[in-house]
Image (cartoon, rainbow, N blue to C red; front, side, top):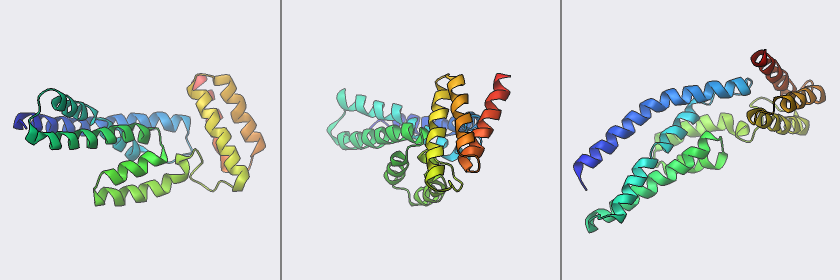
Length: 196
């Protein structure tokens, strides 16, 4: 394979890793406005963005396979396309905070140090990946409250502000002493401050 293409791909990935730091920070700040009581997810956003930045490398490898790769390079290009393609898909879903993508992307990295870091980081946020608070949920009622809270944040994200406010209010009234109730009240205050 052409050495220049390999060097350019490495430069691209290094530049993408640097740019992803700023993208992850922005994504985390937006999420904290919507869900102020959840833990920071900067590392998850960073990993997801870095993984997605491998999509052009996968596409380049696929194009090389289809349009004139030599027989010696075929296996290498196929491996590169599969590796970066899998990571790009997992990266998209890691940004969406999906558990399965976090596990698959971590295992597919084949990096023991990254696996240990992601295990420790993901374990602390495992419940949040399902839309439930990181704090004590207070049993089944708390879990029900967090499922409703997740639904309210989806309404808010879709621009249905009034419906989201009503659902937040219902959660705050129905689960007053749970973490879901506290998060709902914080979300109400945050929305009212933004609306003015």
